[in-house]
Length: 577
Image (cartoon, rainbow, N blue to C red; front, side, top):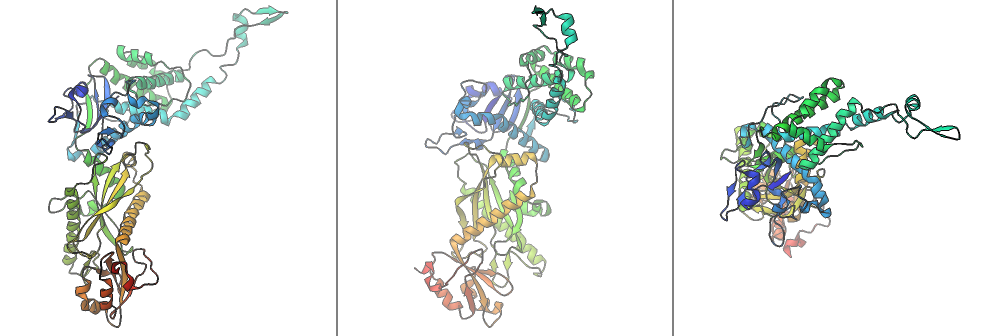
């Protein structure tokens, strides 16, 4: 197995034997080349599988600013996984080495899954493949597909293999005394015959075991030849060299046809079919009569976007396409409806963008401003809808009484790799420090142009496995959406003080109108009888505002956004000191 990395600058001599014009490359100014693809191909030129891993596995966050695979190795030194000098094969790197096959095949399956889901995108490329009808009726299988099915069959039928081994071994060690007495000459000692060799009841391999031994021999051959990770529990004497000879001489399919009628169990018939397809394909490769194959994607960021979408989004894109494909040509990566930050009884759109970088690269300013534009477009869409309904429906985004705009939750999310903890099961969704913010006026949280974007890291491998497994885990989606809401609320509490304003002796509309100039952009309706006021911490002037509005409003810090205050004194606000 050969391992390459997307967009890494290789010396041409290091990779030309693996590419050989088969995969397009980009030539850089210093003569190096990079590969703008992610995925898999099998080249009969080198008789090996080549996996191109995403650039997210390249880490540049180190003192030398070097591009290091898994944060530890130069990509050149780990190309050939069968090379004994490959640092991946050192004891201290055993975990990464053991995971290389799993990782490579997960990436392959992700590209294949994306290709199946998005045939209209046209960004995937497949070479002409030899059509093979499998036992499931697949029309086109790559060599790696066949290998993965063999390994999956091994994992799914361990109990069957164990049962067959036990049943066939049962009684085989019992001595067959009639055969032993008739065919062996004993030694007499004190008139007692002593037999030096015993004949047992069976000395032939059962037909079932014959097929299983061939199967395990094939698995060992794949491990030795291509470094695919194989787990074998049963103590069979395998012959991977024999499999190699069968592949090279083209005798594997002949042998399987000769023993075909010995098997009747459904599982063993399925195994026979799998082995036949394997030998048929392997023999074509050995005879140089097999088409090179590939499944590559040029823009893996689109695959990553689809991966994230599968674990965070709802059906908003399908129900309201204009929110995704916006009128000005902007395309939103992720959008879903969830509870507003103020009122859990109402829902608002959460807007997200996937960031696919090498480890250590920061979010660019262009991406930040595009994200602000996404939010403005969503707000405008809802305002248009509001006016089209003649203002008769409850508007979540805009409050007509205060002329304030609700807070639109906004986030970036990027995949991250922890080379010291390769884990496919924990999402490890972590909030980065700081946020991207923009506003036209200071201290106006409820202004249309005050926008906040939080930044998250998530375990890339968790997202990868969830996507490939195609599990719509609604409990997880709900949990991650809840985290987005909680983290945004926490950010707001760290940067704003919140107060509940209830009018005294007059209607809410009249009280707000009287103090409209002082309150605009700072308040939003909380319920039918009160509004919420947000005051940015460390901004002076709250005491003065309090003096102006307190004759008409009861001002109390309450459990708004989860905050709770006691001994309220507006003149001791931190902003006044």
